[in-house]
Image (tube, rainbow, N blue to C red; front, side):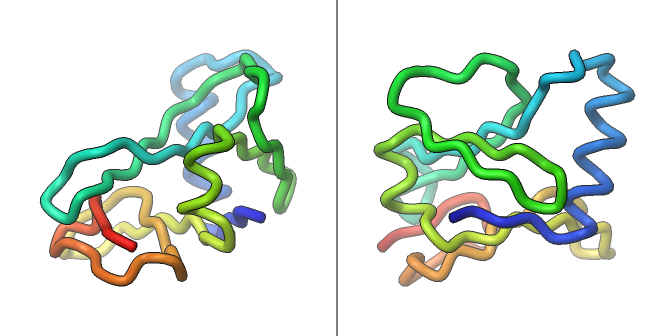
Length: 108
């Protein structure tokens, strides 16, 4: 399962409204090869579920991840931070053995 914090939920709802996303929009998360640690996180809004996608709902937010990425993201918590060190969505991934300083890439 992939979960979201209250901060991530509130920010996602606000962004979807600001971007005039359809009512059935959700958060799509994934993993790509690349980044300074080998794998990088992807996050976008979408409203099309694809074959093989894993679908979760937490705190009223629908989260979708492709099957391959799910193997790297199982148990991950999506958070949002607005601190002085930068703001944005943060992946708290228990599967990551190492993360880069910016938090946008990791390795297992």
